[in-house]
Length: 382
Length: 58
Image (cartoon, rainbow over the protein chains, first blue to last red):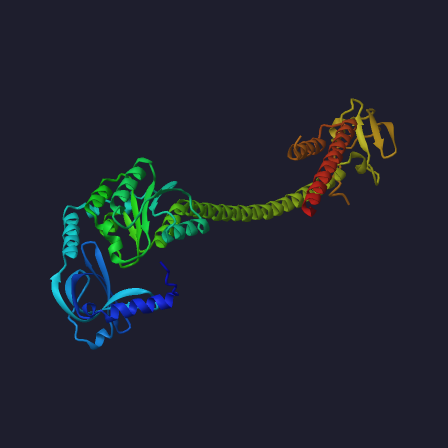
């Protein structure tokens, strides 16, 4: 049997021709639940789902068509045709009319489940307060080699953090995801970790089905280890996200927060050390200032005492010079003693013929009293 | 002995020197002793002042 060799463009062209010329595919009415809904320019892109089957749909120039108000979770019928997008090699259902059929089964179930967990208080069981201040061991549940896993690894390699990461691989979408994540959570909870991170990147709405699973939700409620989630994008706030201690819009945001949170005690310590250093420097400055003031005062005091001492020394010197016994023996002044070597201070001490000792500046002499006049007043004499 | 005590001692000796009851020899003895004490004190004070001034320069 010979092979038909085609390039991609040729193959896509053939497929487009087959689909577009197939009359049965040109006028269809498809029923399903809207699980994804996006407006882009004038076009409306949505995913119709029924149980585990999904179909991408588009309504071109939606603003020009009188469409009813629709939102995610509604069921509807879309009338249109199958189109094969040759450039992308994708099949899409191009609708022209939408007929709403009420709220969808999936949306109802999710809403009911959310309400049940909310009214039972399970959504308030896990809070930010349960996150430990010191984070040393973190368990990461995500798909191996996924974009989210690489994003997380990249942030961990660039950002300072205090913890080691134990990766517990699990598929995060598809049929087995619910069981695999539940098992991974059990393993993580037994490892005495500080925090468990559950994460995956963005995707189609149906890829997040497992995060609305009741089994998984109950497992999350039973966890003793705090759980943080970084699942999908801003629009993907799942039931599991709401049950976690804290959830983030993306795996990146989750990892960045985790790194910062783990570093907080170090930053606090650093801040306290800085404050202590500032206070110590302030005290040292005060001490130096006090030391300088004391130094100046001490210098002044010493200067004053030295001057005082110099004056005292001069005064003593003068007194000593004045009191030099030899200095008095000038200008005819002599020192006279009685024969008993007592200072002769009064005329009453001597009588005629008494012997006295004379001391002069340059020698001594002995003399005898020849005459005594006890009435002389030198100050009144004429 | 502290400078203050040395000054007091010299002042006491000067008072003693002015006392009426001393003969000349005793006066000379006390005077010489006072002068000796004063010279010793002056030397000590000068040394201390020099030390303090040297410290201030540093």
